Length: 354
Image 1 (spheres, rainbow, N blue to C red):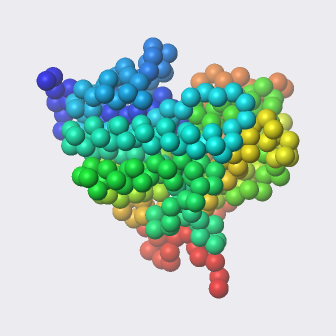
Image 2 (image 1 turned 135 degrees about the vertical axis):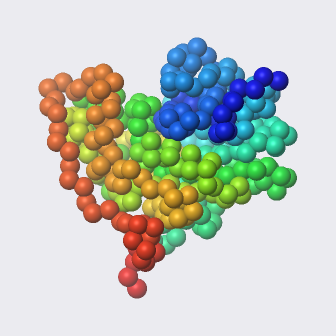
Image 3 (image 1 turned 45 degrees about the horizontal axis):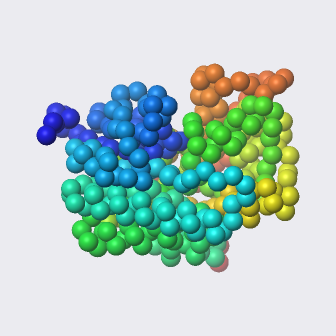
């Protein structure tokens, strides 16, 4: 067998290497000296791979077709979302079918990773957990009861745990909503705003928690370097926000019109009740464990720091500005919540007063 990596650092195989988090993970690993393989389904995806990532042709649904690459790698990071395109509204029964498909694909990939004794890092997300009465989730929280994207994690996580019990060396890294190049942020927020289209679902008061994509990426690398197989790690920036706060900030930085509120009941016939719920529900995320055990800290501690930087990156990439827009000044950032690793004090995030 050919040996791909003559260096000391392990070889990493990344699925979903052209997605919002996957691109950032690949770039972070390459710049830190890792040899990175990226699974791609076609030539168009191959062309979008980050610099120095070695393409691995294959279908995520059929890992047997790229098993040789699993064998060559030391670690597999599973980030791919492999759901069929379905026009029209998406309801809960559709989400349940998607969850079943995701569980089946994970089962196949985990089986091969276990067979070849590879470390696997899987991505669930912050919605894997059920929030406490104050709206926070931690790695000790109970598994999601199925609200929003939690319906997927409720079906998939038990499969992951079953493979761990059978001997799979595996961790999960679970970011809050990640914004950056690609993914939902580019297709559903930035590009519509570049055409002057700006809206928010409902009144925008829904609690959300975000993380900039490169900050999420560093969490994956630190899991490789310092993480413990069998553990799960949540990632989020220092301060929860709301849907309106985030969307309005992006619009301001883009020079787009202020977001228009569209009532949820008007969107449900077009998008489906489950889709509306999924994109308007997120718990507040306590990432203390990753900060303390992995030494992880976000570079962009709030959306007020991260969003302007990401919008500038889109401009450098040549994304057109909205008609008649001007370059916006960055918003002042509110005081972030400082994690205990930085101040050696009380638990992070702060607990409500009794």
